Image 1 (cartoon, rainbow, N blue to C red):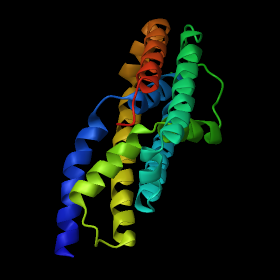
Image 2: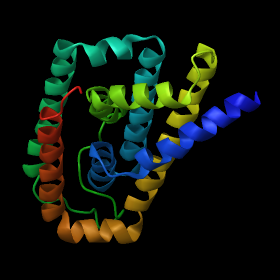
Image 3: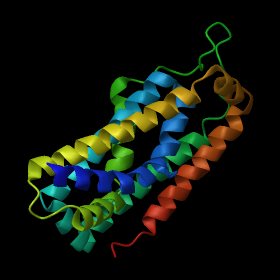
Image 4: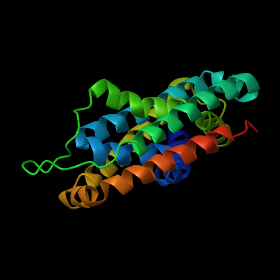
Length: 211
């Protein structure tokens, strides 16, 4: 048990930097919070965390190694993921100005379904092949080959929980009255900026290589 705790601590020491590093997932949660509110942002956060477990699971089962070694599979996932991020970017650029309801202080936007909010987060992470390489590298370097699969799965659950907690915190921060006020004044430019960020991440993903 002591060895497993050391492995988990080592994994979290590395993963903590990946959690806070700005990326497409962060941009997604921030935009969800500003445009669709706290509920949508939290559901998107859960989608991202669930997607992380998707990556961890097939990495443990050995499928991650197959994907990382198959240029065709890597390319398919990469291009679909890049197209998805660019699509999200274009939608953000076309969004224009978002207003706040003067009575509630909430954004005046169509209520986003739970399925769509969750799916946005899940797909943004699941269609990115880079986590495959990330989890393969850290599990290979920090986790013993003799560690049972159930324990490795437990590591993944802890990592996913921490990731969700981080993005839920971002969701609450971005939906405070002060941040909503800032968004109301600058929503047009924030939508444009987030659109360009999504497109930039999409182009970066499109240029990624498996090795």
